Image (cartoon, rainbow, N blue to C red; front, side):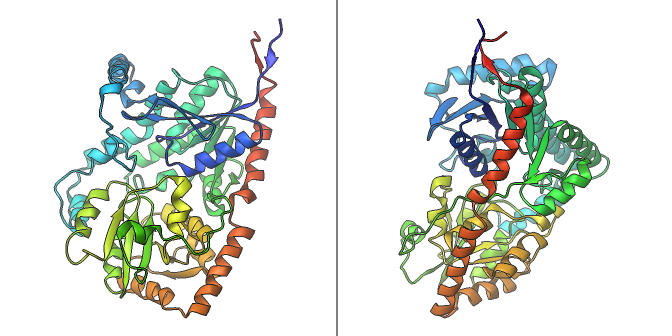
Length: 463
């Protein structure tokens, strides 16, 4: 008896827990609304459900160990993971309130020192073998191990959409086993990311060749801006990647604007809020912003997010000279982030010019600030500066200089009310006209349409 047709299926591979990956969630809901059957495959950590449904979206998490990539270690790794999952009902939640994976949270419990001291000493004493061990574990061993884990839980799909280089091994492996077509979503230039940019020769060349080999096997490559597309086209030797910008859906801030940050911190309405939201890690200009806020009267710096520096930053914020001027708040779900962003008077995004990846970046937080109608102070780097300058949505400065950062923040906060209102209206108009997810959806859906047409019409119960 011939099988009946099943819906086209798009499977997303997000190399995280699936809780805070706003890009994956936006894409998944877009595919669902277009009639695709959708599943998100993520990484499991103790304390998280293996399977759950969020807003109609199915999320499946695979227990993960890099040793699954090594034949001689695979059996013991699977036995350990199976044991952890059997003990799950009695295990404490190991991720903190922000959803930080246990391996990330555990990396941030060393004795505290001032931020600049920790960063400087750490870089000087880090041994090359430790750096290379970390890099190789991150890529390719973590990706290979996750690919082996996914094979145990994955179902056939027409399109496999992989996020970050860590998904590349799984894309190839799942396509070979289940068929379908693959998309490599390169959100940045991975080999120029902060974890890889300072790697020496020949190791970096070997890892770059491995990424290029796997990326060339993908049926499509996409990225988040034109500058990245140009670099990826040249480095991978592939047709120019499609660009699907990392922007939120259209959203109109309520009137009056939300005041979640002051409410959470118990601050008076007169206090001006300077917001950094995102990963709490090095090379993001956080330390420079902490020094800059000391020269901005009547303002505080709020750090909203999670990452390896979270606990050290919280300790520093509790001590002079930052006490009462710098606050650290837990990360919030993507569905709430815009309301929190709209509670700020200025958003800061001062990524340091330490790599090509950073110089060309157009971070998601830039577009979230635009959507929320909040002016920005951003790094004077090619990726961000053109948008900020051309649209008049804020100011750019040297992200290495606390003095320049402070001057830029003061200039925005001290604008007369009429100028401030005009800037806000200009920002919101830009969000509605250009920088919104609805403008990007046609590119994504055309990509899926072309991929599933290549797979042939799938059936249930055939063969």
